[in-house]
Structures are given as structure tokens and as C-alpha cells.
Length: 154
Image 1: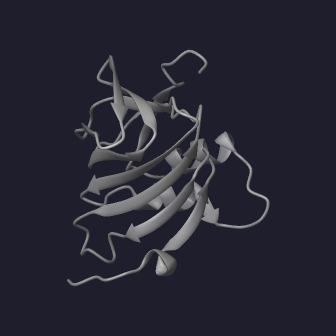
Image 2: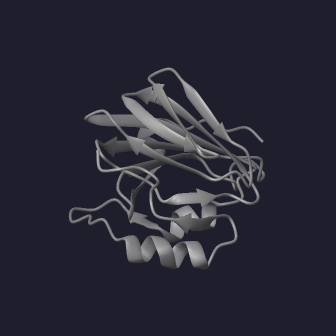
């Protein structure tokens, strides 16, 4: 299945945990093979500790730095670096630079429904809403929240 899409043509969504997601390739675009999202993040953004039972998640850091908590160990990942959380392995991340840009690659694209339910089309008044993150996670088998972020305050 061929796909060509400019950044201007990609769908942008506000993720309720913070960040602007640009959907570069959805499972519908790739026959379910993968989900590819660009994420623009502010410093201090943290994810809860979680697993993806049905997909591997790879983070590619385009700019900035993140601290990745992967299977109980913290790793600093700078621009140009990657981290891969295999399916079922607990992980979280925190942006440690003033801002960061990441690419998320989920293989296969098994948790797209979670990202859609935990976001909305980009608009003017976007607010962080962790209750909606939790509601989206409980309704989708692509992600399981295990607990709060495993980091101290940035």
C-alpha cells in the first residue's frame, strides 16, 4: 500500500496528556502494519507508567531530550537517539529539555484507537485532561496504565 503525505496534509490532534500529534501514517494507511505520529512537546511533559500489550513502541527523538523509564531503568535519550519498548514492557518518558519533538512508531498499529480517544482535532482552547486519558485507556486494549509517572518533578 503506497502512501505519500505532506506535513500540511497530515491530521493534527491535541493529545489530552499534552502535545500536538501529527498523524503521519495510520493503521488504515498501512494495512495495520504500523502507526507513525510526530509529537511536539513542552518541557516537563511526563507520561504515566504504562505498557502496550499488542505493539512495540519506538521513540525517535528529533529534537530536545527525554528521560525514558524502560523496564525499571532510566535512560537519557537526546536528539538523534531512539528507545524501543517491546510489547508488554513497562515504560514512561519525561521531556527534560525546554521542548522536544518525537516520532512514535507503533508496530503493529494496535493502539490507534487509544490515541484517537485521548485526543481531539487541533483547536484554539486545548487543555490537559488526564481524566480523558484514563477513560480512553480503560476503553482500549492497546494500552494499560500501570501507575503515575516514575519520575520526580522536572
